[in-house]
Structures are given as C-alpha cells and as structure tokens.
Image (cartoon, helix red, strand yellow):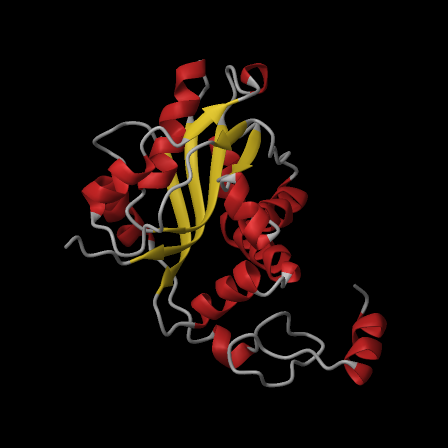
Amino acid sequence: MSLFTTSFIDFFLPRECISCSRKLTYEEESICEKCYSQIKYAGLSFLDSEFEKKFQKDSLIKDFLSLFIFEEESPVRSLLHGLKYQNRFRIGNFLGKILAANFEDKINNWNPDLIIPIPLHKLKKAERGYNQSYYIAKGLGKRIGIPVKTNVIIRNKFTSTQTKLNAENRKENIRNAFSVIKEKDIIGKNIILLDDVITTGATVSECSKTLKKFRTGNIYALSVGIADYVNT
C-alpha cells in the first residue's frame, strides 16, 4: 500500500495498535514502535536448546526457527490473537514479512521447495472461518519466493485444546491427527511446516511424521512465537 493511500485511509479510518490501541503513524503496521520494542526475540542459543528438547530425539524435524518469545502479557500475544480471532488478516502478512526480514538467509540455506501451514480440522476452520497460519505463510512465501501449499495434508482428527495438557498428553492428543492427500506434491521435497506458535513441538512433529511416510526430503519447522514451556 502506498504512503498516500495509507495516509488517506488513516485520515478517515485511523489504524490502531493491536496491543495498546494507540493511533499508528503511517510508517507503523499493526503494532506501534513502543509495543514492538517490548517484544523479546528468541536468541540462537535459546533456539538451539529448544531444538534439543523438542525435536532432536525423534529426528523428524531437521531444523527449526522461531522469532519471538511468546508470553501471556507480551504484544506478540496481541498480534497473534488479533490475527487468530479478530479477522485481522493483514497481521499475517505483517508477521510473514518480519519472518522473511529476519530469517531469509537461514531459510534459503534450508533449500525449501514449499511451505505448508499447519492445517486446522474442518470443523475448527468452519468455526473460525480461516487458518491464521496460512496468512503468515502467504506473507512469508511472497517475499522469499517459496510456494505455499494448503491442499497437501489435512487434519482429520478433531482434537481438544492443547493449552492445559502436559507434553506427553499433547503428543497423545495429536497422534494420528493428519493425513496426506497429495502424495505426488511432497515426494523428495524439502518442506517448511509453519505454525503461529510452537509450544512443546508435538503438533509439528506429528505433522512431520505423517509427511515422512511419503519419502519427503528434509522437513523444517518455523513459527512466529515459541512458548517458554514448562512441563507439568
């Protein structure tokens, strides 16, 4: 969107920060600079530690990246909830753009062939109306030139919310939840699984496990947020 168009729209329908509701300047997108400055980035040493805890043992995920630490009071939560529950689709594009700006070189080193947003069950998608991870994937794919596929794998098991489950129960809850419906699109392909938030890693691991039955290449995980999860 051009500067003139943004300024014109802001004059009649001022855009507000998703976190604090302050009026945004024309340079700001979805969140104001003050709120954005409060977001904690996930450092590489932290990600290395999380990879070891979440993915190394099963050898399903070759590598993973998450940009922000997801905390309950963080503006990251406001961004993701705005996208997930308030039909704020532009936030997805904004987050995809930020992922590209921070991780493009690392993602290119993965040599990915396609991005798959983690699918929702059809009932959950019907209830919400859309898959929030698709809009993040779309924003990312547009900027790094990687196609986004939404019709390769489906979620065929309606699972209860994972929020209050421990790591083992999350694994059991998500077990056998996915099915591949277009085998020819993934054979030999390096794939990025994109989710909004990674907590224990159970969902992306189960999705990867399903994909790997069909002779894929390497599978990587990517998310906007990573929760500092404590197993209870």
